Amino acid sequence: MAARSGNDGRIFSRLEPSCHWPNDDELGLLILGPKRAHLWPAIVKVEERAGFPRVSTLYGGREWAAIVEFYERRRRNVPAAVMSLDPTDDERAKENWGPAPRKGAPKA
Image (tube, rainbow, N blue to C red; front, side, top):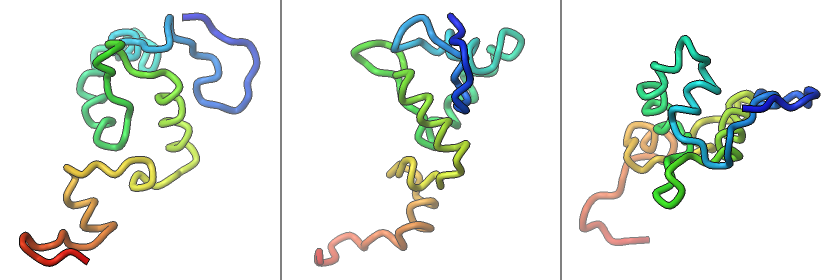
């Protein structure tokens, strides 16, 4: 974990993972620090529902650039519905898009 010099106003400007696809153990240390890293598994489950990047089955980690973008959008107060529309989140979908169409109803 190398620290970059300078501060460009980004939250993660000083954090640098060991690779482009860090695993959850490394992310816990980077994001929460060594004393709270054990909380990461529970936190990441909640964050995934808000659009946090999922673990790549190919690379076995989460893409660092997408993680930085996730937190930058949050810092800029971009609504969660714009960040990610999770089709399993029925309440948020109803709130943003209205009720789901009835089964068997003709498509428009």
